[in-house]
Length: 544
Image (cartoon, rainbow, N blue to C red; front, side, top):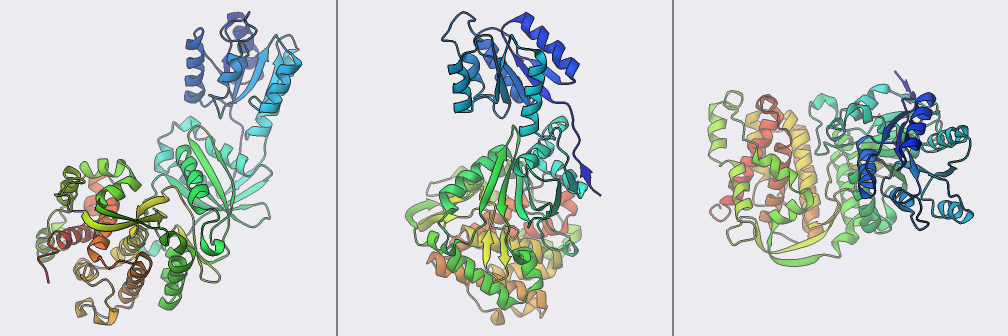
């Protein structure tokens, strides 16, 4: 199924301090079939109302009078100043005081899309509006998008679905701005863990990563998210990624666009074998997987590990909180650990319960952050530039088994072990959690929280059995931890487990739906691991 973009009404903002002129524009716009809203008030109140309504109604075009404060003040260019503050609304400056100097200024500074002389034929104004919407927006453009259901998926993404439905058309306008010459776009979601595993949720609730084919061209990578996230990602890309990775193993930034709520970033595609690392580890043998991990951490990303910052008496909780922000703590504070007695069975449930409530451990850090009673306080650690969101869908593998990363929204300074524990946690949660039964996963969790991070798989607890997939997962995890020791130059496994704990809690508290959480086996296993991790850390000095 495909979908052809259709024209909805153009939303026009009228900003003029003359009531008679406003009424005249309203009459014309209504006749031409445009939707319009009028800024009200006088002086600064008029300017403030224009800024508010441009954003509230997501206006495509604004008709802005040059002199909004005083028609007789030749120095008044308040309208020209206003249009910089109502972007991405495109403005047409309207004035009866046309001068060559004014027109040249508008063209040179590109502050407005066009100029209209109040004394000119109104049909000229319509032509100018049509020219602007044809150049900047999707109106009057014919683009076929397939399959249509992916557009629906984008609209249902958590942070986008919260936008009023009538303004979801920004998605189409982003596509137009990033693919202005396209006649057809074919969209594919970047592969995640196979659906057979029945678990593919990653901690990216507010964005969608796509592979996009424009007409007959080779594909590109497209991320669609809220505008502020795209702005942050562009900033991080330029600051931490561009020209800074060894061998230049990164996609090339080909463009980006942001509107009032929604934005998009376009990156060059990677000629990959399996696409994402998620599918790569599911289909490929251990030796190939290990090679790709070594390349990424020891080669591509290695310059960042050579420029570390040594710190003392550091709260690891503060470092991870700085990366994820306050929202994950807000979710954790209203979350509660499920009581899956019936699903786990009495024996396993009793064993898990003795491991403490992992949320109580987090609350202790919140209450004592940075003090001597902070359980995450470490005497010495390192900070480095980290990817910040290194799950298996953000790591791409090319034909040479080289690792490439995308999605730099959280890239910046953080705990030197952060990327390793993030990828470790992702593999555990989305692979093993979905497959193992509760007793098996309990023993698996005990094994991976051992005090020896580089223990060979052959010596792992025999209670795990000989399951090939489990042993493969353990091999991958062991490789990641070995690479952490090499790259971060630390053997402090307690710090590693703290990072793993933070990641597991972050994932476990993503879903606020209590009823869903009670019956989601994978989520219950995640809480099991969080409980075991918290007990390991709390009793670190008490255990052999």
